[in-house]
Image (cartoon, rainbow, N blue to C red):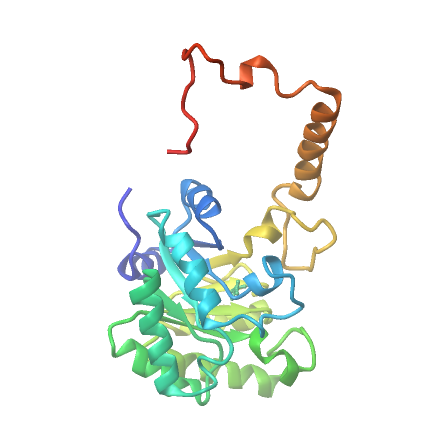
Length: 278
Ligand code: KIV
């Protein structure tokens, strides 16, 4: 397959083919996600939650994003790789946003970056886009604003708030964004924004009418069985499967069932001699 680009996503918007985006944070998972045929891998700052174990994305730094994005791009995926600009990089202003975006492209081979919010962020989006780095916007429940929101709650309910989001979406497109993530907003609002914009909208908790959908990999694989907010569907139960497999390993080692000679080397070099991964 060929590499997915910004132009393919625009073509999908026009044809009505749904765009599929999944997060990944490392080489091995990026390979598996890519093999499933997703269009975009998002190296989200949600890694702060699902990889680092924080209760928000705020502790994630630019160095973390560069590290994880490099791990993903080393998998040489066909999917387009979009990296989140972490808290701090954007809040420090346009120059800092541009510097961080350039580092993500140059040091980690990101193919686009994502910026949360509108308002003061619009000039940053404009600066990144006009520096030839595709940039995605992100509106609604933007996790980096959790303290202003007073918690993780649905955004855009009520006429005034809804109008403000539609207006922000228009401004983000005018600033040069090439796609827009809509998180946890009423589906009627996503439908309106999706119809209004020329760029693709990618929803998470924003209903079925967006041009595409994104989910956090760990959520869709059911790694944490107890985390099932309304917008998440578990397509696997890794929270059960992984401990079951590991439990069998523990048992077999304790009982001397593993390893057998089949999994051992002998002085007579025959059979599988390979010891490295590649
Ligand atoms: O960080 C992330 O994974 C995200 C998605 C949830 C959209 O921003």
